[in-house]
Length: 369
Image (tube, rainbow, N blue to C red):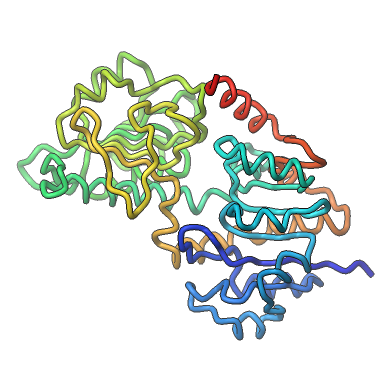
């Protein structure tokens, strides 16, 4: 009988309190014949004690054993440099990697011949990215919360409220992208009472999207002429396109940003690599870092907003991710075909194997020259 082991790790970056699997998912792995190793303290931020994991059938172990007891390891965030020492041939490591922006991590995975799988690359047969759905929805909601907060005068904002008040012109919100993050942002802003415009490039997809939106959301095809007209009127711009990289053409140019009212807000929640489609939003911010201003416009660039609401994020992500993590583990131990996790594989046998990451790293190398 095949011995099937998986490890669930405690997060090591930035005090992140999320965990990729709660006791209920551990019990589900056990029901499928897996020995589950959980790093001690992995669930404490969720109110899930080591005893809770033991009751679900896990073996709670120290860091070294959690990394070495299994050939399949799951975590939320990409490994920190201190964890590179655990990389080895035959290891299948799954997390969010963003390797296009982490060439040092990519080189370590290549050098140690780790098979790495990145959640944002798990793609189903319909072209959707199911492991990013919950985080993207949370990021969209959080973008609106952040925007409403930073519009306040004492934070350097324009003094505009996103909520609708009778007799007052509603705030104007522009959402770039209509995936999960863009949809959540549009609905949240519209629910507050703002007038929302959502931009996209596919007429057929945008038409279907528009049918799901409330009446104060308008959907338009992206064009430079439209942006030049809309941007100066915007109180908030939310960037939510799926992929941005070093070669992405600027959508909201510096000249457009300079035309906005001082104290307006730009929030990029998907971020990608490099300046991308929002070139003035070229510095990432975290929760302990103040937003910065360019041309008098407040900028926030944060691709890790779900970390700030870790209870909600973990409850949603762990449940949604389980079938895909199980599929990956089954493919490793039984040879079962799992095209979704295979599409999410970014390194294998000492090479970067995902075409998107290959292109990203080339773009980064060219940009550095």
